[in-house]
Amino acid sequence: MEASLSLREALDRAVERLERSLEDLRAARAKGLLPHVTEGGRWELLSPLDEEGAALTGLPWTGGFVPGQLWLASRLPGRAHLAEEARAATELLAPRAGQPTTHDLGFLFWPSALLGYRATGDERFRELGLEAAASLMQRVTPAGVIQVIGALDDPGYKGRVIVDTLPNLLLLWWADTEGLDRAASTASSHVAASLGALFRPDGSTFHACRLADDGTVTELGTINGYSRESTWARGQAWAIHGLVSAFRATGDPELLAAAEHSAGWFVERLPGDGIPPWDFDAPRGPKDASAGAIVASALLDLPGRRDDALALLGALVDRCLNRGDADGLLLHCCYRYPVRKALDSATAWGDFFFADALLHAVGPELRLDPLQRDRR
Image (cartoon, rainbow, N blue to C red):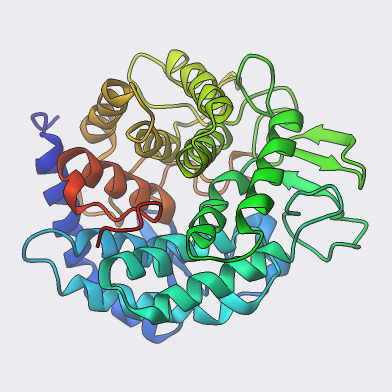
């Protein structure tokens, strides 16, 4: 194994690899495609404008993480030209902003439009973000939660909620600071319902639930995890990230306590190598480095958890940083084990959160933060 790298060296390596991928990225973008996950070491390319009926298989939700990586990298000395690449990739997503078809509008637009607005101050990106936030708010059910997908009266999807929605709410927390009416109350309502339905007393999470119009939980289970009672690692990571963002937006001490509780559960159950399994309760299976990257990013924003974040980042650098010829920045991520999809791969979201955590750790003054209004 190559000697350990510092976090700064790892960030430089990652950005250099991103630079080397630009020709392929431009060619894909010219066809309306963006990287999603790797199979056999090469990016699977998908259109971010795919029909939303496939969202629970993940097809259209990852496009925002590609411009997000480029916006982050553009902050480093000598990399300002990457902002134009980020701008072009963000524009590819633009038609989705007015389509209220999925909870993933947050993932599509806060790494792209919101980071673009922070990086440039361009009103175009602010308008895209606000349009996407308004669309997301159209997905609220009578129970006060954001339904994952499907028409609100579709019996197959009615009231269906997954833990992945929590980090998508960052779009709404930001939109509130920009004056969008009811954005914060919508986000708060969803968080409150999720805490009651998806979180276990020990701080672990269910992946999915269904809520009746009166807020009663009628189903609990999983889509991507090992079993109903298990804790899918990336779902736990999404929960932690979403709670940390909610605390940062509101200052609510109860949300801080919930974030601490869930983060502690995750950190205390990491294996000796520091890389999360795909599901904490599965008897076997691959690692999911992307879950570690999401949590490392969140822990850097959680008071008193910097050492845990740096330890997690160090493990990711030592064991998962791409040092070879395959595509992507962060290897050994698992997308969807139950359907055997991308079990040991790079992923667009893993790369984004890895880059965000590295930049936050080594150059916090350069970080792009949607929840910090006055810094660009």
